Figure 1 (tube, rainbow, N blue to C red):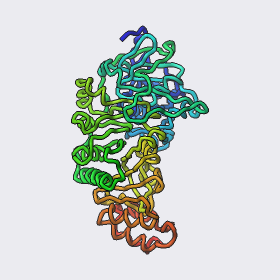
Figure 2 (figure 1 turned 30 degrees about the horizontal axis):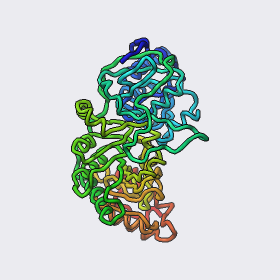
Figure 3 (figure 1 turned 180 degrees about the vertical axis):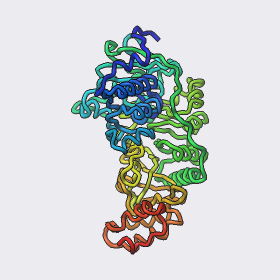
Figure 4 (figure 1 turned 180 degrees about the horizontal axis):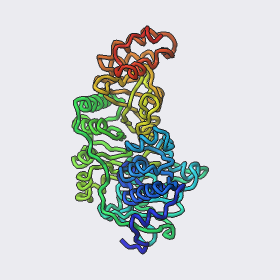
Amino acid sequence: MSFSFPKLTAEEAASHIRHGQTVGFSGFTPAGAPKAIPLAVSKRAKVEHESGREFQIGVLTGASTGPSLDGALAEAAAISFRTPYQSNAALRSSINKGETRFVDMHLSMLPQIVRYGFLGPVDWAVVEACDLTSGGGIVLSTSVGAAPTFVGRAGKILIELNRRHPPSLLGMHDIYEPADPPHRHEIPIYHASDRIGSPLITVDPSKIVGVVETDLDDECAPFSPPTPATEKIGQNVAEFLVAEMRAGRIPKSFLPLQSGVGDVANSVLGALGRLPEIPAFEMYTEVLQDSVVDLLESGRCRFASTCSLTLSPPAMRRIVEQLNLFRSKILMRPQEISNNPEVVRRLGIISMNTAIEVDVFGNVNSTHVLGKQMMNGIGGSGDFTRNAYLSIFSCASTAKGGKISTIVPLVTHVDHSEHSVQVVITEQGVADLRGQDPHGRARIIIENCAHPSFRPQLLEYIEIVKHGHTPQSLSRAFAMHRQFIRTGDMGGIKWEDWA
């Protein structure tokens, strides 16, 4: 480590950021997100507001971040605009109240949209690093996200140098930005392990205003213990993929996997690792969770290309303690590469993501509750789903203690249409939608994936509305949702009451 940039306190760094400016923060999930500077910005916002002065900034990140960034800034009413993804309760509340403008966006699109200038100028980049050179070389910490684009486009840069992450992470990043049209060429990734870029970001050192030294863990929360439902979903996914191998529709060498974030995804990966019929596999994904560390250590996962190490602090310490092992098995890339549709299609990715609700025709809602309340955002699921060799969505068949069916006549918000969704899996079973018309999809989804307590009324629905290429009723399509709003339970529908 060798640099001569001014050392600042977090408060001194925050004092440079002005009301109305746009800030690009590193991080993809809480991994690699700055913590001290945004927390100081939030404190400054509170002081400004108490003095009767306006203070809000536009916030760009790679994806979601941690409580010291999204949470603190939202609680201080300091975010005017936010994109492309979030998962913080305080920020979610602000968005749903209309206090923060939120643009939900495919994660692969964000960096190029920033470079194209579609979101206006980026005034500041605030980036967490584990090392820095006097020549402007930045070694990122536990994610890449959109940091290369932010530091390239920003007028000025602030660095959080986090001592918790060792400089020896050098070599685990693969920094590559494609040229913009009309000069863009193919992205030369032909295997998940192909390295195509640089291990660090290089910027004009005159843009770096100062460095704040920290010693902080990433704010990645551990996942909940598996439940019988998530375990069964994982088992159903794994057994389906084994059946596809036996049928010759997945090669015996297998294909790279992409997995979303969360408890269901963790259970799915655990189940895949336990099945001996599935050979050691590779991952080409956007996030690595704790379960993947086990798979890499055991050799069940040979290599993992990712954008982020979304690991609990104990799992991250395992990586650091065995860097010689993991440096040969993990590569972190920018999100426009980890999620790039061209690469996803070329490699033949099997995508596995989660849904909030699925309708009987295979449309998936992964972002909104009752059609209007934003949860987190589409994230990278669309990047993979629309381009995957095989696209799978999973969820538990019920929610709210069995009061909500996640299988419904029509989703209240469409993120992934029936044209992109090939397989739906719940703890009840598997619905393979390939080659099925809407009538066939409806029966397969209801019979295989719906909970038994809701199955009869869903079957009755498609009998009532059986005519047309897509059997649907404009008056009854949202009856289950409307009944839940009225009574707190989607069950017990009398369809004639909703004609």
